[in-house]
Image (cartoon, rainbow, N blue to C red):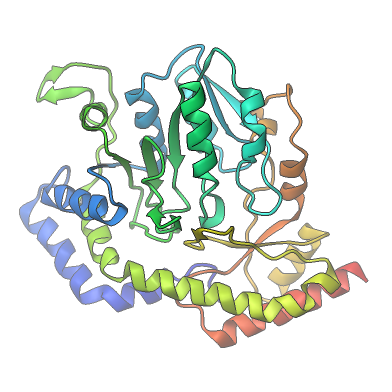
Length: 369
């Protein structure tokens, strides 16, 4: 049983995938080859923005987004207390300060009602994350951002493919940043990422920063980094895009099956199932439940051949490199002790999900007995 099944997807697109990789090997432009521009156009059209800039990873997408906005020393960026560490890491790398906000207990996304109390004269931006595949409340955050003159940056590393009020993730802020890490709903065969914007000036800065600040070869108009996407990764993503919408439907189907299989027993065993907020669709990057005695449940499932994962075992503000003792994040702390992600990918079949659900319910019952 696979937690994420990349092999089945590869089998589905193998002929066109191999042809695309062969074209890269043939033309030999391994960095910034023609596949990059083609992918950027496809992704911009898909998300519904004017501009897409392909980069080397989701972390670099966030980093160059902040750099393009001029974020630096003494600036404060409001962000979630519960996510992968990269969201806060890029803020700290630029000498700015992440200001953490606790999460909503239902969606695991940033609790929008707690944002305004964190705003002060040093606040420059709000950086929310679409955790597990669904977007936080951008309508409310856009209003807050406008009222306080802040930039809204969307971390769409997990929510690419999701929508909110009919708008695709990546197009919900001033800049959107996503990851194409192999395990994502749309994943490369290595690291890759992208930034999205409707602002032409920001697009120019993003393109320059990803290539050492060059406006043209050997003419460096600003400080930048090496964040160029490899042509081979763009070739892979172009082929995966041909089945992406269908795979999103398959992910939704798998999530619905989990709900059907688990909802009858969840309350009785103290298990909480994921909820998609009104107006949202989810890309179902993860199917994450909450259970008591999580570590024992996970260990028992592993012994029974059911792989699981914990996203994430600790809130960001307690990580040694990012510690912030100035606030309290009780919902994040409780979630870190209870979240458990089940196998989730488009190629899950009903028999496998039936087995997962039966084993999960049995293990949870035995654990709480």
